[in-house]
Amino acid sequence: MNLDANVQKIITLLLKKWKTIILFALIGTFVAYFFTANFTTLTYASSVEFLATAVDKNQELSDSTSSSAVQQASNTSKMNYAMKMMATYIEIFKTNEFNQKVANELNENLSTNYSASTIKNAITIESISDTALFKMTVTTTDADLSYQIAHQLEETVPDVMETKNSGLVTATVEDTALKATSAQSLGYAKKCLVGFAVGFVFAAAFYILKDLLDVRIKSSEELTERYDIPVLGTIPEFEFKSASQIKRLEKAEREGKK
Image (cartoon, rainbow, N blue to C red):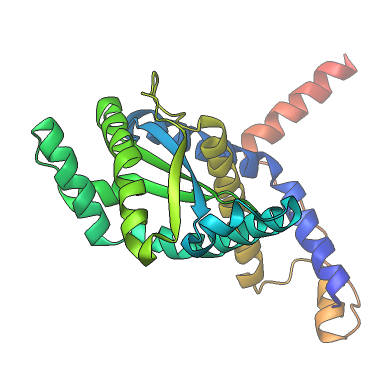
């Protein structure tokens, strides 16, 4: 049996069982919706965006007297350097040292007791492609906490960048943090779609495996194809009727003749 025939057989099998497969897919959708509605924790996000700028301290005085073309080339070189250094600084922001510094300053300002792990687990960092911009997003289950951490980053990040790498790259706040007014979307549509797909694939895989594991011969064509032997004849299927069915049929025939 070639590949095309196998594929055709699978498609035929799935079409025969399409109602059950769709039922399983709908069950998967319902399960995904139920768990999303009842077991998903609401989260709140606040983000702050920074611009990294390279500083060449040896050229600060000469730049003021150089031509505009030279200054433009110098600025481009600084921007390229800042962009190349972005990955390094992002890794610095993921260290326990940095997150402990954020926690210490936050605790000092607000009289709280947050740990470095709390800060680290709440922050995600995104580098804006082909730019020297990067965004730090704080996500927690408390809108106030997310905003407080993001607001603290506005102060801590520029300070840390000024002390690292001899201050060759600095950061300025381009977009300040805002307090979230509503929780992030629970993503019902996406999760329900995943549930539908899982239910569909599970049901389809079940019937395919069941068919593959079924070694019974179901037709004369399959017998000929599998063993390459001729079929001389087949026994027809007889419809057996019970005694009560036979009596009803005989009674109906007698009444019909009257």
